[in-house]
Image (cartoon, rainbow, N blue to C red; front, side, top):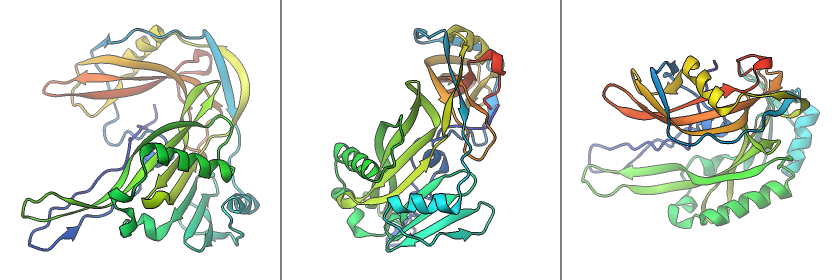
Length: 319
């Protein structure tokens, strides 16, 4: 099974300074799990659990569902320049070195980076996104509904919403916090909002394909990230029922941070598609059950998740 887990939102790093001066906390680095829309397990991995109970009614399921074939996502320099044009950038597209090869286009305040092998895209107002600008204090942020409208307008006007894109959520993004030893309330000097959009196929969400728009003070766009698995219809296949997926879960195990889990309670089971990062080999996007719930260990309780592939004819792996 792949080692992937959705990480929701950005971590807030709070540095309690020793002394009388206010010292800034480190601005959190971009969380790739959130940004790229895929779940990262981290150090926990899968664990077996001796008992699995249902805490919710099993949903209806269609009996059979479409499997999609993935499309090559390699990006050429010409492709990168066409994407840059959507942002009003005319090039040139420079090739960056390093382990991950990218095309980089810069104009005025913004930098556009597109990975050659995956097509993963970031469009960043670098100085603002570093978290030092006084315009990006919490009191200057638009409301969540305004953030949604700003993000949707920007993506639509720049032709960045592929067919199947749906609004997902608005949440707190990064923060910069000042504190001191006196016990006074921390001062938030920077904050932004994450507006997330997800992909859908056959009306089902695609875990792993998504767009994030980061909005700062005054409704300014600070960053846009996009990771998308292009796919085309292949063939319909019979799929597991939700009950059969639970039985598979008993064999596979659950992903959780709880040590020595003893009992898991399924609170949610939904059908979706699971997309690995573009650039990795994944011939098909298969209907998959996303299963989540709570888990009890020897001395603690927590949450778990798992993805159970729903097309037996194509094997038990997510790839």
